[in-house]
Length: 374
Image 1 (cartoon, rainbow, N blue to C red):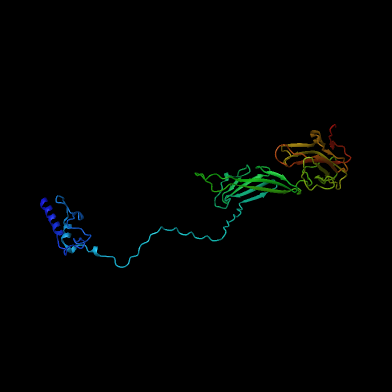
Image 2 (image 1 turned 90 degrees about the vertical axis):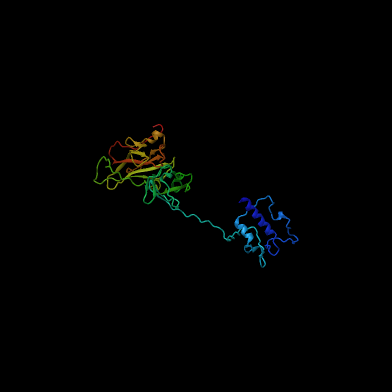
């Protein structure tokens, strides 16, 4: 079958080529075309040589043998004018013009997250945990008042509370002409967010200031002792009234301020109200200076002892002394200003025990001073 099949294919192919011009397919070139190909030009049609083997499928052979199925699209032409297509690089979109309005950043509003109460001897500071009003709550361990941690925490209101005496937590005291000023530093130092190297808030330092007027009278009122006065002769059933006052330099008036500088002299007057009594004579039995109102506290310095001897001059060589008595019911003495070496407190509390006797009675009480030699 093989040899007969290839022979029949070759004969059919030669028969197609030798057809007349009328039966040529439209796409087949004529022999008379000036630029056409001759029948002898086998290379133009890629015709096989005698020894070449060409393989055709059955359906391909039928197309060649049936002119009705020949393609006609080759004679069709585009009708009408055609528009030439033009290509160019794409252009970038134009940037919209910005409005000619200056940009004004929004100013930060005060957080109003710290409240301060200055007491007579202490200060209380309340800090909202939403410190910057950003919704980020600060942690108690990240904020301190000087070197003091948070005293207590109000978890319901999200408030941190500090409480301290005026001379603690690294406070600084400044004295002006009219005021005593205590300054604290509220320090917020955040740490990185857990598990990351970032911060959500900035650190901050706020000055907490408490001001106290120097002209306010706080301790020079008349003293009313709670003990029963010692007297040589009781002349009436009425209780004796004693006073211990800070006086002006001319001894005419009670001093309005209790602020002194080192080197100043304190002018102190002890007195007893004469009233309807017989003539009374007042003595300063003893005086003790302390840094707090408690007379038994430490440090403690004895100024007058031995029934009325001003030993400050004897111990320190100061100018402290009793002045000559002008009235029996009044006794004046001068005390040179000082302060305690221990602690940072600037206040001195002087507690004295006063005694009144009749002017003619004999007594062991006295008002003696010490000088350099006697």
